[in-house]
Length: 356
Figure 1 (tube, rainbow, N blue to C red):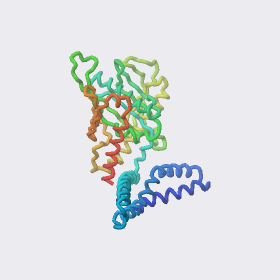
Figure 2: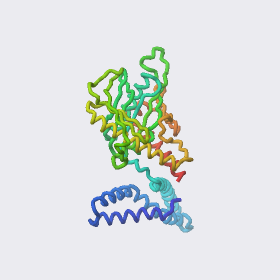
Figure 3: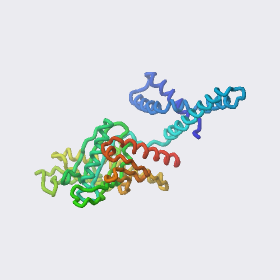
Figure 4: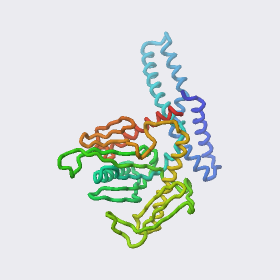
């Protein structure tokens, strides 16, 4: 049961913001903050109003049902309406509970996507490339912008590593549970006896940090420059344009060599570094807050096996929520990605509700 006072506070806050925003007496900075808060409340305001009057309407219907003078048709209508009302209230209650939960400040941020080939040699790098194509298709379907920051290719069109920036609406909240080990089971094209091989790729999704989120001091950085190298280690540039940045306090290291310009490589490297430091600090705070809280959904640990893609059986299984979709091809095309994500988010919300 949600305290009625908390729900009434939502309605009161929404009403006050509406009045203040129409008064033309708010400065620009405050106006932007208030507009954002008002927009967030708009998503839940009708549910809050429904929840406040639910008990009154429920009692009115029960009164009709229990009134001996009511005819059968009236009682049947009241029973049907009561059932609809109760079902709607259950859905509204879940939405309100989730809305009232402490918010992850990073949910509305853009994201940095990192994919690395794991165990499995060439097949692992081919799978890493397939995963990146899948996320590209998800981005296209959602009208998100995805841009490669850094890429390292292997033979036969595979990827050793790719780092990309994804921009759009609520990116991090959608993709944050993708971090972990993704395992593939399939027959490689080079396999002559039809045996199924298992390989893996690691995915990391970080909230893209802005300069206001993480202040990096020059004195905390060690920057090394070196000559860019391509596959097999051959030199692809005659100048020392590649950059390796070490953040001394955390030990986080970022290398960047995709650009011919040392300045551009440094800019890209700092962008990745900033997001990794931001996530490092977030994890540290989260660990301190929830040292004894375990989540089945996972912590975003890159070593945690989260999903298996079984091509011979045409299925994709998420091990955290025990959900299997027998539509692997559609999933790899980004068509039913939301079905998986919605189920993961739903369980994550339920676990969060239990711990708050």
